[in-house]
Length: 169
Image (cartoon, rainbow, N blue to C red; front, side, top):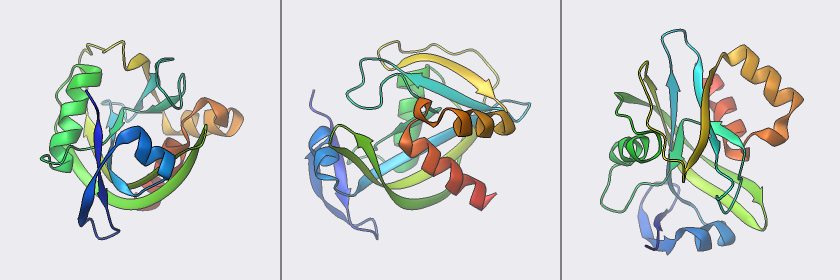
């Protein structure tokens, strides 16, 4: 099934739909969401993307990041992908949104109007192995250390979104 993204202007007015990979080739602004999940100890959940991903394979990133469908709200899309990727349901709160553009290699660009959600989750996962290689929780201090020592192990958008997150909290 062809996956479409919703093209928008900076005010989030819909301009049309485009196949996801083509939007990433063209670097066109589109809707996205990012979910940061934490456990009861305040550690952040990371997922490692599978080697099958067409960009940024085998890199660590936040719990979930994807694109809402045309008929979905950002929150509905975030909850759908939590279930599809991690096999869970969690209460989410929207914290902020912003626009970024990142070169993800291979002639591909993430140019997104990104709505960032957070939640707390302390139970079991049922990982979709077509999407997620593995998961782990990490303290923010240790995450900062790992990113500074091995930035190539993390997705470009995650590094940008994490910095934006820190500016808001």
